[in-house]
Length: 422
Image (cartoon, rainbow, N blue to C red):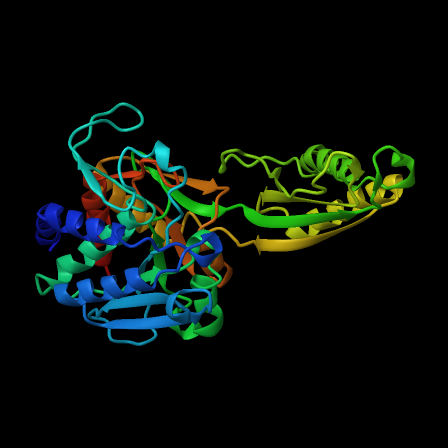
């Protein structure tokens, strides 16, 4: 069976280019980032899959009045397996159909919404490669999406029934927190997933394909609002400068939180918790006014051994000191917040994936943790085993984003090998 699956996938370069090229035409950008959402891209994908023979499809549309037709679509495609027990585990590959905006247009060599093939060239590390495909979304996450489709088609096109049922998820809203995607599905359609399902998420990886992500740092975004008293800048003593207080708080959090939560974990890179002040909103528009309100944000990536509640207790302690010193009031609002357990490195999923990667790519794997977020965290929180893996060059969100065609075909073989196992 393996030989037949690999032979089919090996002959799918044109099909991979076709799917990637067509998907790239649809700017599936979240309304949060000024787009219309994923409707057009999902409609195309449904039709394309049906024409190729993957006809068992279900749509789960999350309401969002800001998006085209008022919804954010999530599509599940199924290839039934030999095991007909409805309670048996299924093998999932989950990718997302939304993309980020292209960014500064002048930095692109080509139109980001028209996939362009580039012959030859090298990887980031200088090693030569075959064909590259350039365009927004071609790696993040269309490489994994296309690989999963080719792996499933290897069974469908050759009339091979997999041991376990194959499930492909094409989700919305991953780039902005999955509130209309996986998080929404888990809350509103929990029966879609089984606790004993096994999941591969091809949304992060390394250039050689050796890195399997089994854990993510706890993740928290907070908006911090400092309120003082506006005054004329010629009489600063009559006001309470919210900007000065917020600046002091920024520095205290930046230095104090890493000191308080200073443990290391070599599974991650960087191996520590990070507390990064990021965005700052404008305060007063003129120079000669003491600002009475100031707003800034922090992005916190916290090692799993620490709870986000414990971090917030320390934030409360530090902000109380600043409030007392400057006579201001400070409040914060939590945006994204997630914490989840890791997947066990001894789980059957990780062992099977490691073995399949070694067989296809001839390399030894290593388990890693990441600071970035995928929707694996939401699934792990529900006790569903997940591995995040792909052979990525890591050009996501960058100008001139590209994927390597050999990566798509190789990753599809890894997926098909796992799909063929009992």
